[in-house]
Length: 380
Image (cartoon, rainbow, N blue to C red; front, side, top):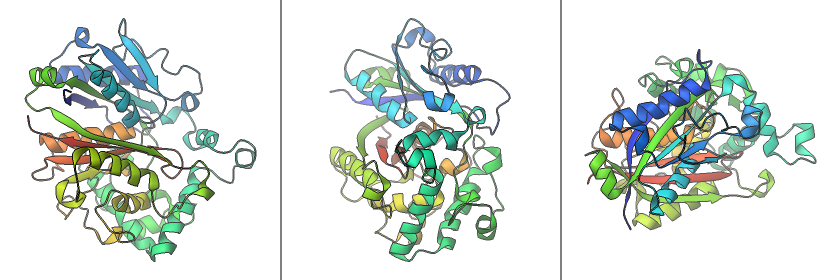
């Protein structure tokens, strides 16, 4: 079976409120990815989009996205999860042998819909949804509190993650401008508005407008397109229980099992020594600590002891991660793009040295109910 390579990518600058429409952003992302790879519209054989009907307040949310997304007269489909899940669909289409170039794009304009309110539709319709006591924000408070109390982690430890990622975002020109803060302090984070105790505003990945696109091709085709393909060598995915009360929120079982699947496929035994960095979709600052343990680069309860800075022992989210901007349906795809940049040596301003293998993750559902992870590698 041929390998599948990422041969192109493009991410639109993130905005809290973009001054142009979603269709223009979609066109910019897809056209930009093709142009960077030296390809034409006629080279596309399949397009996978990632949008969400609930977020956009309409059914068939991809209906008017076909033409700007490059899918006119081309095999086309949609995924309503995260862009990282859409890439799995694109990967399978390439592996089927029926397609030579897949465009995978995802994103939305969170300035046009009440993101957190829309996520109430993830809850139980009989009790939780009408009362609205449980939602993605209060669930994050449960998750952070569960982790802190189980492992005696301080709120200051979690605030430091928010500081690190927002300072990293300040080096990333595509990150949300409002999330970029090179002078942020833990005191600033702790004194920001309380969202759901103990979560504060600056610990939250801010919803924003943005689109991202990735190009996938089989091995022989990939090597014709670029001399720097990034290979997808491992994939893992898993979904945890629906009800929060049935889950241990101090850990992330879905990500642990997704990583186990991906690692087994590649033969990774010691992630910290065999992987060079991680780009993880953390919806809240505390999730980065939980996720660092789930991917196996820190021991349980010891995520805060890991030096995850750009020049640290194991860099996590040198781009700023989702705390640098969280465009629904694009955030996981952006984590993949950021990992690709690092492997190709194209992360100007926040490049980690000697990156050969990286892990990137996406998530959906409250408290990362569903996780997907990719092992990405360079070299021909």
